Image 1: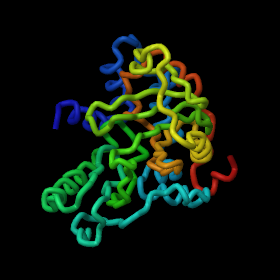
Image 2: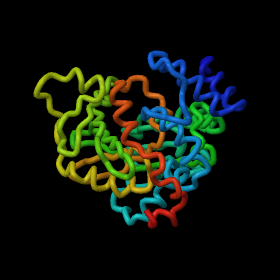
Image 3: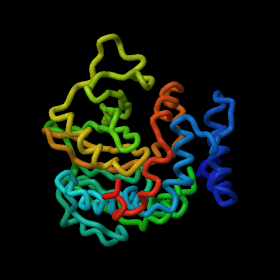
Length: 307
């Protein structure tokens, strides 16, 4: 474990707010300011505020951040049609019956990030090594929420979920569509392409699918550059609006294959709320779009209908 990964959980045990203040100061020295909880301005600052206020001890946010239980939220909204096919749910890797799984599948833990295992061909699967990897990921559960003081992950009960392997017609990994939603409304999509290359490209587009130069890739794109427009792209905004309705800020992660939307997950604190790669003016723009009072009393499934 790196020194940084040791220090931040240690500081969390002293004070979660101290932990994020230290993290903010080390990542954003060019801001020349301390993280403000009284007057947050940028998106990253407002995400830190939301962590300790709107999203803390919020059963709805915890449920929706849980990659398994978020299905309850979609069912509550009547959006079962965009859920990915579920093959199984397990408490421990030892419970998996590998023989019953299809040739292709994805298995992941329901908490945190990066705990996803993609199997494109079960005949080449090394089961003992995969089991050990899943066990190692499971060990991070008790400390994951401490790394960036993401308190909404704290009460998630670990579950392994196995789902359908999503791929394009030519067998490639699908394009990721990360829809940025402010005060319950979808405004921009961050399009992630070329994931299989190990060097993915990211571009922001608006509701008309026009390139927005809001990040480094968009800023450096040549004049006239266009992000490929998928069939049925309007659905991304339609579904994201329904899913984001209760929240002041959330990123709705979706796929869109053959004109059909498939749900990925809801992300309330992208990169833990620390994204030094985001352009400074974009951080301020996105921050100005978040109303911290929006949805503050929506804390359960029963409250959703009141918004």
